[in-house]
Image (cartoon, rainbow, N blue to C red; front, top):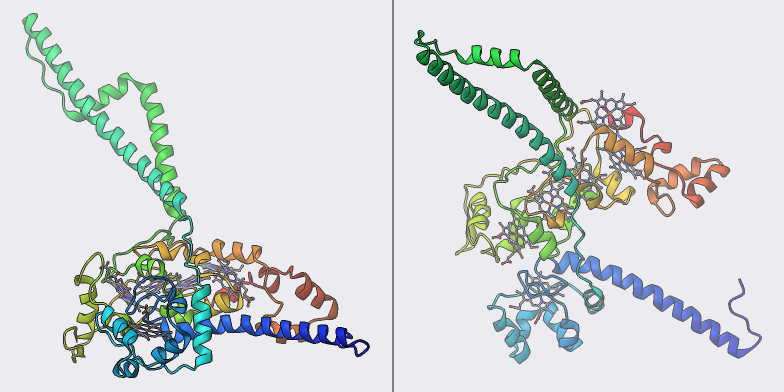
Amino acid sequence: MNVISFKKPTTYFLSLFSLLLAFSVSTSTLQAQDGEKLFKSYCASCHSPGSNQLVGPGLAGVYDKYEREWLYKWIKNSKALIASGDEQAITVYEQYAKVEMPAQPVTNVQIDAIMDYVAAYIPPVKEVPGGGDVAMAEESSEMSGYTIAGIIVLFLILVIILRKVQYIFTAAKARDAGEEMPEETTMTQALLITVANNKTVFALLGIVCLALFAKGGWDSAFGVGVFQGYEPEQPIKFSHKLHAGTNGIDCNYCHNSASYSKTAGIPSPNLCMNCHTYIQEGPEYGKEEIGKIYAALDFDPVTKTYGPNQKPIKWVKVHNLPDHVYFNHSQHVTVGKIACQKCHGPVEEYTVGKQHAELTMGWCINCHRETKVQMAGNGYYDEIHERLPEELKKQYLEDGTITVSELGGIECGKCHY
Ligand code: HEC
Ligand code: HEC
Ligand code: HEC
Ligand code: HEC
Ligand code: HEC
Ligand code: HEC
């Protein structure tokens, strides 16, 4: 490519200009990405990039509200700025209940990147909640159970009433005729007599009941071990909706290991304390539920000290694959680039943790059959590419038409120990 030509000065300048433009565009996108990372590692434990108050105020709009020079000073050492008598700093400090913002080890360039990220931040849009059909299905199968029980109870009541009526009539007849009073029939006798007198009706009823029971049995036999929708009660009323939804806390902040290891893990109570050292009351349960974190850590919220009697929080595991199955988060999240929500549903809308997908073998295999592997630009596959014959390289890399199953993703040994 002959970008820089010396024939005419104008072409020369134009080329140089476009090169510079390209360079500045690429560096500015780099900065926005860095900004997000920097924000998450330095600021996200106390600030939302939107307008929600966490430990500190939401940062939306601060880039317009304050002079850049002031921001540098504030972020790098707010305490010093307040101590220097800076009026604006004192106002901010007093406005937010005099909670001190610790000095942040960031440079001016990094602050610029963070501010670019905050300025471009758009709060997540809520998805339409999925799984509605699941709840429906459960309801209707419960319905058929109740219907059967209802029919049987009604039928028994009817038999008892009929038996009484019949007895009253026969007794009255006997009395009128001056005969001996008949003996009252027992329940079973009455049942047998009624059935004997209405054979066809009962034959039909029998068939219907059998069919319904058989269907129920079929469903439960094939549903063994399937806990879709499982929603156990947890020791602390932790709400994903409040944390990941309303307050926009990133999944990785708490389930960091999903991106590099087999498990996603449940955060330790110490991580909760990054925020809950300061946030001591919740919008719904006041001090009660957050108090349980303190109890687990033997933490005194007044003196902010930890005692010796710490015990773990016993979260109830929602997802449970059998021991003979191997599943790896990083393979799916980092290599496969699959969003958490694809397998776990709209978690940011759950007030109670629940199992969204079936987690059956069919569920895993179907996705492996349908999903194309994202190979291009994926470091994980570099080494495999080297070993591929040329014609396959084109097919795998450029066309990107290889599914997980074609790579061996439905071989038994891949998922079973
Ligand atoms: C440990 C908690 C904590 C961390 C971490 C933190 N801040 Fe703060 N920040 C606060 C608090 C609390 C305030 C409220 C002011 C005060 O009381 O000092 C605040 C105030 C601010 C303000 C002023 C907001 C306003 O509306 O007036 C800005 C800007 C700010 N922080 C930026 C940052 C940036 C950027 C980072 C990351 C590099 C960061 N903060 C990290 C706690 C924190
Ligand atoms: C503030 C920390 C925090 C954030 C942010 C968070 N989680 Fe969680 N997550 C937890 C805790 C604590 C539990 C255990 C309690 C429960 O199951 O509700 C949990 C449980 C889960 C479970 C169920 C685990 C099991 O027991 O099988 C899934 C799935 C999950 N989180 C996914 C997500 C996703 C996806 C996001 C982002 C949208 C997210 N989490 C954001 C703290 C968090
Ligand atoms: C990044 C900050 C952050 C982290 C980490 C965090 N929380 Fe929270 N938490 C919040 C915010 C913000 C609120 C809402 C406060 C409000 O709206 O008044 C909250 C509220 C709560 C509430 C109160 C619910 C209510 O409605 O009363 C509970 C309980 C809670 N969190 C539990 C946890 C647990 C358990 C962990 C650790 C697994 C955790 N939080 C980690 C920020 C955090
Ligand atoms: C391809 C589907 C899939 C994706 C994508 C996925 N998960 Fe999971 N997740 C699972 C399965 C399956 C389990 C059950 C694992 C087990 O029981 O061994 C699970 C379990 C969990 C658990 C329970 C604790 C553990 O590690 O077993 C948490 C928490 C969790 N996932 C969070 C996340 C988060 C956060 C993301 C996104 C960063 C994510 N998952 C992405 C399928 C997925
Ligand atoms: C939403 C789609 C999806 C679901 C559901 C899913 N996977 Fe995967 N899985 C993928 C993708 C995509 C890859 C390929 C990632 C890569 O290596 O590029 C993959 C790769 C794998 C691999 C590595 C395969 C290989 O050839 O090396 C294993 C093992 C695996 N998955 C197990 C499971 C198990 C077990 C389940 C069910 C509990 C499951 N997966 C559910 C999409 C899915
Ligand atoms: C993509 C991952 C995956 C592959 C490939 C796979 N399985 Fe499975 N298999 C699973 C999962 C997940 C379960 C657990 C299902 C459950 O608990 O409902 C399972 C369960 C089983 C079970 C036990 C059934 C039960 O009810 O517990 C057997 C047997 C089995 N698989 C055999 C095989 C054989 C044979 C192959 C190869 C033809 C194979 N699997 C390939 C994921 C896989």
